[in-house]
Length: 52
Length: 471
Image (cartoon, each protein chain N blue to C red):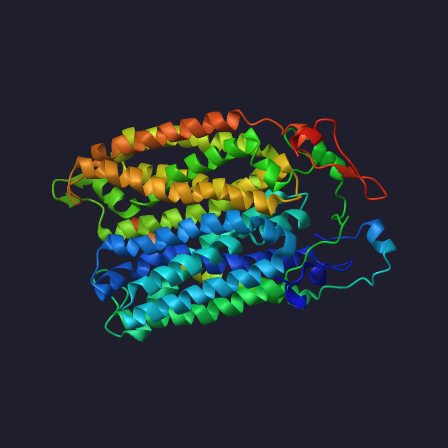
């Protein structure tokens, strides 16, 4: 989803910025990788309920 | 005390064009770290052996941390709202990391009081400030989907335990080769101390990353296509503002406090005893048809549903409303609890299904409460109000285990209990859920006398007629 600025903000004269897509991807990867690791390990443990 | 310039709120106001999707990972970077608090059972037995004390003496460390969480969230909530998320995340990181360092030193030197002071007190303060630090910022960045936004962050708290449990086992098996992470083996104290120091370093990096990428939206910012006037049209949703000081004087605050307390206490009723509970429900004589490894799997299933419930149910509340979703958590939860107590022992799959859905409601209750507060009190000091409400969590953290353990103590010795022995405790939880359900039903919009005055173009306040009488 894109975001925008209100007309009031545009009138402030502040120079708009562009958030680099690479930074967003990096930030999500940084939190996503440990979370995926935790999910994988927990699913592996949870499976023992049905297999063990 | 004045804050250093780089931490001040005015330094992190987003410029036009900033992408709000950088904020959820900033929030997750903090919540994934502090969620470690729910993974302390991994090294609990190691600490019991190391300090040669009772389970209770070590269990107190977690209790102190949860009580400090509630107290610090309540005491520092207004400070967090005033100074912004960067200052809050930075401060939280300092306390959380110091907690691990001091606690690790306590383990290394055999000083249990240092563990209480470090992980319990310092870490608990870090937990409280960290838990509320991104909430009001997320609500302001996602006025169109507040449930989704807070669900993402608070899901991270559940996710933190999923990461810390296996990571702790892995790290401790490296630090103590005689420990292989399986049931029956316990790492030595030095391995746990080394784990604490490792976590201190890892969490410092992660939390500081969150603190330095977080931004607050500029005054008047709104997302594309979002019309704030549509928010007002929904029942129980206000566009007015209520201060934290006034919020605690309203019946709505205490009704939500009751709702959260009942929902959390009921959830803890299962979480506290998950592993022995499933074995006892399917016990035949001295043996259970559910093996210890399968019971550990059950704990894993509950963790997954706890985390998923935070995101799924909180996001759903954006569509069906906050009051209806709590009617589901408490009303359907109540029915499921009765089913668990009466027919839960008829089949393992049924027991697991019932418990998993109940725990998803427990997680959902945590994640949806900030959005409910936003609806009733506005965004003005929602972080501070949320902080005060979290005292319900601290109270439930003490009441839940106390109810379950004291009831089970009257029923027999651990290892000999069966499903029927759990019924009194489960029916107490049913009663609590009924109380919470009624409290939620009683929630009405906040009286206008508690609303903050609107300011005209000159900045002068225009109080509502009743307002002067209550301030």
